[in-house]
Length: 430
Ligand SMILES: *Cc1c(COP(=O)(O)O)cnc(C)c1O
Image 1 (cartoon, protein in one colour):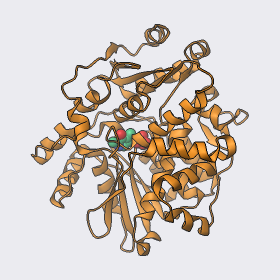
Image 2 (cartoon, rainbow, N blue to C red):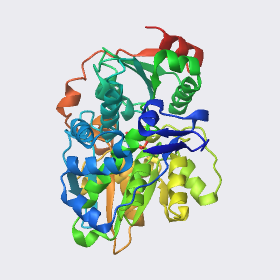
Image 3 (cartoon, helix red, strand yellow):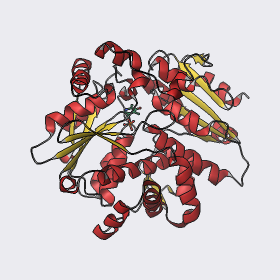
Image 4 (tube, rainbow, N blue to C red):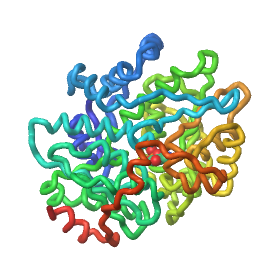
């Protein structure tokens, strides 16, 4: 697989380099040089396979012979073994595709676990220390921490905005210890992300620590996420497949990028909705053509509190490469007030959701046309946002075991101002 840097097309790398580097020069994102295409016949075959088999075929189309078929299959199996396909019908024409039944109860388990498998596979003969440095707005941290937990030669450092993620999210990954270190940064997610980018610009630091990011900027995470769009498609009744519209709750726009890549290689999804909360840089851009990030606003859908979404350049690149018009992308932004109403509405339809998916639901409901079938992505388990969900619905929703186990554990996080030289010393320490 060949990839190039979107900011410097002269920088070309293969898949394993892209996975190890995370980002290219000038903080540029890597993007595949060739986008594979599947024929309708191949699509038919793929849709008949089981999830692991199919996912491994799809990833093979991108990765090529850099990893043998057999190794790739085994890694995919190890990464995705937790998977249970759950498509919950909400109304006659709308379902929620639940992606949150993995170890950390969010869709990020797919990308993080695949990346962990690939990285440890690529590193198995080198015996070098890898430092995973990641910024999280809530769920990435947990997924990455669990995916790399106790892995040999890997040290994980996770930055998150202090007091801006839910208590249970924090318990999920700041209580692990061993090779997992967490730092509560006194600032916003965007500040955490900036610190990570600065670390990647520091060549010396990079070499000394074997720095790698597991953010959705890492191409391996995005590729992994393509796989579940095929699964969603396969779970829809034939008669609806032609008119399928998928609403994606967006933060850093990795999930949407993966969906668009699925469409680009030949999964016939009719259209997507980019759903954001009040952090509406993209909806505003699509409306006015002006890219003008505002200061990040805290909302009840905190995993989407991002005003400078990293993956947007990849989204634009996919549109360009396919000669699609960016105006075909549906979009919308939803306030907290509407998010709460929508959560209540879903509850009245007998479905307990959480703020992120509720945003996608609302925009889907408002945009869907008569002949269309709609799916919104359930990106996290409602129990991860228990306090918020309980307050809004006046319920006491039960915690799944994976969370219950952690609630009483002590938080092990360090605290830090958003100061790069402090972070640098921390990374160079033991
Ligand atoms: C990360 C996250 C999102 C946003 O996904 P992106 O790929 O960053 O756009 C949405 N919902 C939840 C629950 C998340 O954890």
